[in-house]
Amino acid sequence: MKKILITSILILISFNLKAQVGFSYLHSDVISAVGISTNPDKNIWGELRMGMDINAADFSPEIVGFTNVIKRDDFKMFLGVGGRLQVLEGIVLPAIGFTFKPIESKPNFALHAEGALIVGDFGEVLRGSFGFRYFLRKKSK
Image 1 (cartoon, rainbow, N blue to C red):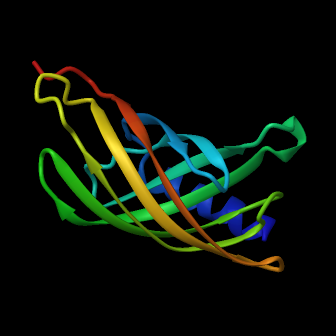
Image 2 (tube, rainbow, N blue to C red; image 1 turned 60 degrees about the horizontal axis):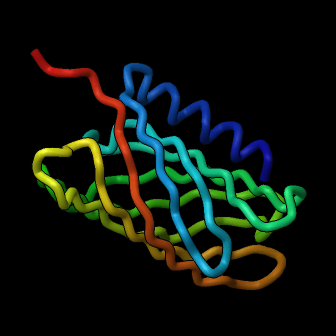
């Protein structure tokens, strides 16, 4: 599992060497996460997340690759697959979600919702999460 995670990270980095960075917070009753993503305006993009729990020993890395299914300026719907380590270690599939930009004057801020099935030795867990994203982009001249 760790080899798959490292290989996935290297592939995502190679696709997005000039990527703009996004930061996210996803809240869930199962396990909340903070994440760093590549440019979601591209057709293929990725996110590295750190799952959080009350106990610091329960921090769990997760990497997910996405493809945009619907892509508009203010709304994106995406599908993805990935994997996670430690707590709920297993494969994340399918992940489906959307990002919506509710404030026209703040194009770097977006609301986010996602559903994913996590499958591992523990069984199956359906995770739903919502949160926000903020993208650091180069200012256009």
